[in-house]
Length: 417
Ligand code: NAD
Image (cartoon, rainbow, N blue to C red):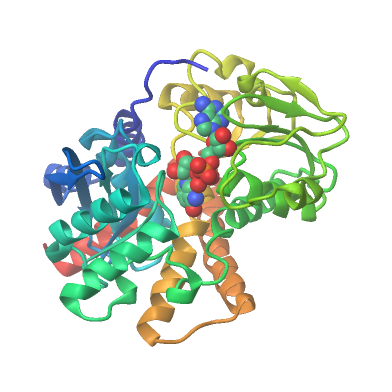
């Protein structure tokens, strides 16, 4: 894997530009789609446990809200930049439009390393972040969610800090603990969506999922749940990769038993040792001779440097932007089918939407209903992309972008701004 930093903004702009070239849009509309509605950067002073002060930067990029309130994750990571958030916020706009849920796109966070802060410090920082942004958030304005470095604990703090100023508002944030109005099925929603798209794409491409070999990079929330649901559908998970190594087993890894063996399922994202599995280099998971590859760890892992060694027939982007745009072009030329992130990992934001719907109705749904609604929404998204790709004889990514951009443009035109 190339160690060069992945430029997510460059790639999201490239994919958008390719879609715009297929659509007949005037310059002001192109500009509107490319630029953020609002970008906010603000300081966050924090009194540390030892009595000293630290100052962090908070960010929120709101890209587009023509189809509904801004929606997007909250990332706590020391390396975040405005450009990165800009790219991720755009991805959210296209993702919500593609699966046709009534939201726009946003992303934000704090440039901190939560592992170096105490629980009290993270709580104070999260609440301070919410208070500073409070007038720009709201169930009908902008709805944060978890992302790298945050989870349901931080979402509960956002809910609390916002509600102190605005009254009881569970729908201001999604990904909350179920006991505070979170939805059942949210934790596994993204991985379940990845598995569903893999199954539908395999069927379309004439690949029998029963016994098909699959390699998955990432054993966190997305990777492990995708592995679990695909194993249940008869697939053979031959390789799993994490930040340290790849574990390979030709006959298939027993994912259910592996998950059962984990002591703390939610927190551990490293793969435990597996009997009979071969240990390989970290990045080998990407270049194994398999039917399906699911990069579900981090951004920019398939680049111009290693794309020539990728031999899967189908790639399903569980992570955001795991394929650099240069490598994507080569894969398309080689006829490798790629299910793009804006579709493949949209299962999470779809159940976030269902959480928001339940909160607004002050009602809770059972798991069956959540799963059924999620599957219906994702299936409509898949059918639209497949039909467009077939009709125009293009890849799934350009088809997905064209549909998403068309929907946003239609909303802008109908609303008249
Ligand atoms: P996670 O933190 O739970 O797990 C990440 C996994 O990636 C871990 O197994 C980690 O060991 C592995 N990893 C980290 N660095 C690596 C490296 N250099 N090489 C190989 N593996 C590495 O994260 P997650 O929630 O599973 O999210 C994974 C990706 O999916 C991210 O890109 C995230 O933005 C995207 N995503 C997540 C959700 C969600 O609901 N969790 C929704 C949409 C998109």
